[in-house]
Amino acid sequence: MSGVEIRELEAFLVLAQELHFGRAGERMYVSQSRVSQLLRSLEHRIGAPLVERSSRRVALTPLGESFLAGLRPAYDALRATVDEARTAARGMAGVLRLGFQGAVDDGLDRAIARFGERYPECAVDIVEIPLSDPFGALRRQEVDCAVVLLPVAEDDLVIGPVFSRRPMTLAVSVRHPFAARASLSAEELADCRLIGFDGDAPDYWRRAQAPGLTPGGRTVPAGPRVNTLQEGLSLTAAGRGAMLLCRSTAEHHGRRTSLAFVPVRGLPDSELGLIRHRLRPSVRASAFAEAVAETIGAAAEAG
Image: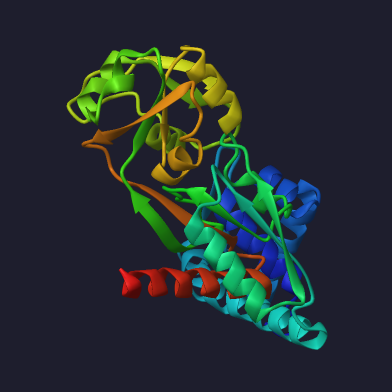
């Protein structure tokens, strides 16, 4: 493997995720033929095919699978080392761009404050992420890390810490029959229209935020689809549907006189998680993850 180029390794890693030369090229901002050229060069250095190509599919060979398993952690460590050295050379000075969904709760506020005290030379810019596209801003490098609703099952993203685990809450108009209830069972979601999301959110993520079936198998009617939290809350206040929210977001908007927020029993708890990009490690994002973890630990000890 003498003379191996980092771009060849990157092409293999991205192709292993996408299993499609065109999409891999889009991710790397190069042509499909350039991805193929980089892969052929890497295979030549290794001496055997890493990928099986046909007109219908792209798949890793057994050697490719083995190579991927060894390469990914080594590549991540290499990128992290380079990033750490670069940051050490210029310090933490700069900006951490933090994306978030919903509302910044007290716990996240404390983590931001802890990070600011530790790294006063690093400002924190907070960017709201639309509910319709939970991972796009991070992949487009518009943010360095993001706080999003779980679940997250994306190979190119690193999850953690996970925090703010709390029961789901249903937002309804104050005129809705549920508005006066102290709580609801998950089965009663079949009696309202749930607002869902447009955009690029994966199907598994959409279903977690707006399930189509109750745990007992009853159909939950689909309401309007929106892109942002504010759109959803406006439609909810107008009586066009109901919206499942994490508790911190419900508490943040609890003073809105046009809405009622009712806890829901029998659904998995909502959770927030800090996500970072696996192939683009950031020292600032890693330092912020440490601040979040320490804040969670301090809260647990105090509680």
